[in-house]
Each structure stands twice: as structure tokens, then as C-alpha cells.
Amino acid sequence: MLARMGLNYRKIIKTGKDSWLNVSKSGVSGSKRIGPVTINSRGGISVKLPGGLNYRGRWKK
Image (cartoon, rainbow, N blue to C red):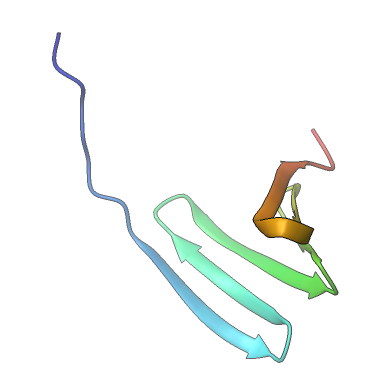
């Protein structure tokens, strides 16, 4: 069985020191970093942990 592969497009526009807009095929979203935590407007959260670890999850459904 062959896996489907496709092209993805994402443009990141920096709007401040710790904030940016992401423009992709599925729309526009904003992100804000506060210390080791990054939150985006679509409900994603990312936390940079010591030792090169990274946690990614959702803060809203």
C-alpha cells in the first residue's frame, strides 16, 4: 500500500518579540510565547522542558 504525500504551505509572520501569525492552507492562527510555554489561537499548547524535552497538547477542544 502506498502512502499519500502532499505539499504543505505555512508562512510565519512575526508580529512582536514573542508573538506571530501563522498562515496556512487551512487558515490563519496566532501564537504567543510566555517563557517556555507557547499557546496558539486554535487550541494548541507547547511546553519546552529541560533536557531537550518538548510537550505538545491541546488546551481547548
